[in-house]
Image 1: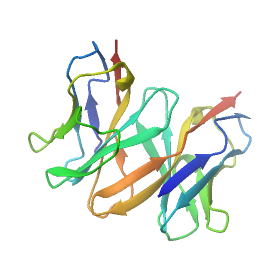
Image 2: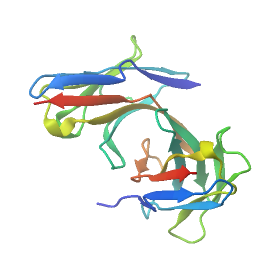
Image 3: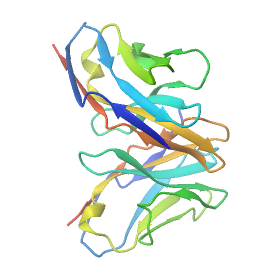
Image 4: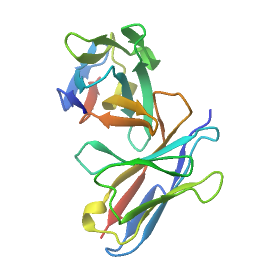
Length: 115
Length: 113
């Protein structure tokens, strides 16, 4: 079984300040982990992924995430928020088998960026 | 860049009616999925489809639901007799062989009245 908990449903930051979106996961096997972003009226876009290579993963738009097995965490960070970062962010764990990859989503974190 | 496309973007239907949601996955992908997100809730897995058959389905995917790949490009989700609680955003996704991630469409918002 696998599960994902996003610790904050809403995060508000000022433009130019750091972003931290927190995620903890539970998985019976070595997980693949992802962050997806959803802008209003848009689909789910892959930001970055961890698949058992380097524990610090860099994604698009300056985001990165660090896989910490001891803490079962995969927090998303960005050094400096931009207004265009305002969106909903989903932490996702993947279970891969012959059926494909079944994704389990966290509840989402809505990021608001103030000017 | 190739993308998953879904139609329509928004569908309103009366309770008890049948509805078909359509998706065109990325052309060389082999695995296809439907997920849904009820307003205010998590995105939930419904079904995966591979090699022209359902490979896995969740408890949500009961006899009211069916999927089909009627030709080489489309992938559809049919809800036979819609209920109010079927109102949600439905996402189609696809992935190639060996990929760990899935690529999502923009979603179809289904409203059952």
